[in-house]
Structure formats: C-alpha cells, structure tokens
Image (cartoon, rainbow, N blue to C red):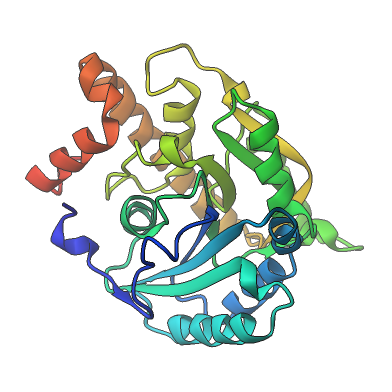
Length: 305
C-alpha cells in the first residue's frame, strides 16, 4: 500500500478492468504550475501520429496529466483540453484521458504515483513527459515506441531534446553559452533526459524514486543500464529513436545556467552516494525487488536519504 502522501484527487474514476482492455501505452504528463505551457504541450501531443497508428492496429492508449502541488490553473486547463480532444479528435476512440491532481508538490512523488498505481496494468510501455515541452516531430512518440519493439535488449527509448534557442536564426551570446552547456552534458552514450522517454512497464514498476532524489533521470539510467545493479553498465539498454525530438525552454542567463549546473552536480552526488554507499551493498533479493525495498525504507523513515 502506498504511503498517505501519495493520495490524489482524480478528475474521473480509475479505469475498470474492461475499460483498460487494449491499452498498450500509458502516457503520464507530470506538471507543476505549467498554466502558461501546458496548452502547447498537449496540443503537440494530440498532433502525434500515435493515435492513427494505434487505430490501424486496434489498440488504445491512455493519457494522464499528473498535476502535483499546483497553485495555478494547470489542472483545470488540462481537464478542459482533455474534454475537447475526447469529443473532437479524429482518433478519439484510441485514447482515454484523465487528470490526476496530487496535493503534494514533487516530481518524484508524481512519478511514483503514475507508475505504481495510476497507469493501466495492461500497458506494456509507459511514457513520461514534462508539462512544459513541445513535441517537435509528428512521429516522435510512435518512433520511440517502435524503437523499443525493435530492440528487445533495450528498456528505455529516448528522443532528441532541443533547446528552443537552437532554432533561432540569430543567436545571442547567452544563447550560445546555453547551447555549449548542452554539448557538455549530451555527449555521453545512453544519455537520458527526464523531459520525455518511454520505458518498459515491467522495468519502471520495479523502480521507486526516493523523495529527496532531486533529479530522477540519472538514477533511472544507472538502475536500467546495470539491470538493477546486477551487471556492468550497458548503455545500449537506452535506445534513441530516429526522427523523434522535442523542444524545451533553455536557461540563457548566466545566473540560471550556473544555478542549473549546480543543481545537476548536487543531484549527481546524491545519486552516486545512494548507489555506491547503499544500493550496491544490498543483497541480491533486495535488488531484484528494488521498488519494494526503497518504498519500505522511505515509509520507515521519510528523511532517510
């Protein structure tokens, strides 16, 4: 059973077992105070070829917007767009939509809630995306999904993240500085960004994110690429889909760039200490059931990390 802080208010009741039949993809949008951005995010999502592809195969997906700790109109905006798409989208029969409003702020909490209790159990692949990105290529989600199908040894599919300033014809000095930091962090193999990725449901559901993790993608990458810390790192467990990309707003001021870099460094340190000082020392049975191990640890002491 989930701890009390995972309680959520849903705009619609959970899907019944019958309603979930045929759902092969569950997509969770994790959003905190994105009233200005969520509209463009959802519009880009509903323009995806995913829905036509599912219709051809007699399959369905579900889309959940997990709003966490919002103090603006993000939940209401998402619910209004969902209602409109449910009524007028040309492939409306291929998807269900739902807003899950979580009182507590926190991306890790929203991630755990979506993965472990809200996503359809019939889904073989889960997509996680932020509520302030714009999906650029119309085949992005479908190409990521098929990349997983075509690479049985991979557990995660990613696309190409693009900073909005990269699309500008004339770039300022700040724009170039921001792009330079991207080149520093995106050159390593198997690079994972938490803004958008698809993950096999069986893998995701054996991961639990501690509340104080700060940034989740580095932790998920280590767990996935080492097959839950049982093998040497294999970056090929993360596959990049072709013709798949999304755009996100870049940090351009020196202050914001340095603040973000500092945050990333702190997050990497936390992840390193968590893995090297604690998880690697766990017995094999605890690693094999890592989600339950970490959930029990946090329930016993919420501030353990």
